[in-house]
Amino acid sequence: MAIETWDSPYIVIWLCLGVLATVLTYGTRGYSGKLNGLEAAFYGVVIGGLAILDGAALGQTMYDKTAKYDIWGSLGTMLGLSGPLIVSGLILIVFYRNRVVKHPNEVVIKGEALEISGSYLLSGITTFMMYGLILAGIGTGNLVVNIVGDRKGAIYALYMFMPIIIAIWVMTKYSKWMFKYIVWVLRRKGLLQVVDENDPE
Image (cartoon, rainbow, N blue to C red; front, side, top):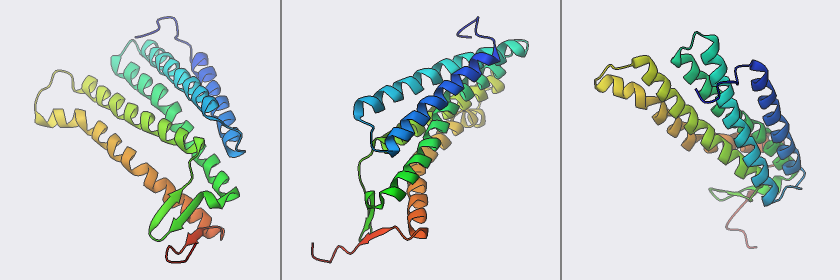
C-alpha cells in the first residue's frame, strides 16, 4: 500500500474532519455570495488533496488491520478517496438549495427550458460528484478484480466493468435529479419563477 506508516484510524478521522471543515467553509461563503473563482479553486484543491490522503490512509489502515488482505485495502482506498468527494458534493447541494431559496431568480423556468445562473457552488457540486462517482466506479471495479482473481471469461469481465458503467450512468443523471429536487423545493415554497417566453420583455 501507499503509506506504510499511516496505519492509525485517527489519521483518517482528522482527514475527514479537515474535508468537512473545508467544504462547510466553501458552502457558507458560496451561500452568502462571497465566494470568488480563486477561493473556489483553492477549496477544491484542498478537498481533493485531503481525499487523496484519506484514501491512502484508510486503505493502509484496513490493509494492516486485516492481516494484509488486498481486498480490504482496496475497499478502504476506494471509500477513503471517493467518499469525501461525494459527501462534499451532497453537502454543497444543501447549501445550493438554501441559496436558491434565498435567491429564487437564479433558477427560472422559461417555456420548457430551465435557466440556471452561474454559481461557484454549482461548479463545486459538479466537480466533486463527477470525480467522486467515477473514482467510486473505478475503485469498485478494482475491488471486483481482486475478488475475481485470475478467473477469465466474458461474465467476469462484465463484473469488472459494470461498476464503472453504473458510475458513469449515475454521473450523467445526478444533475437532472438534483434540479428536479431544487424545482420541487421552490414550487413547494411558492418561489418558483416561471416565465412565459411568449410574453414581451
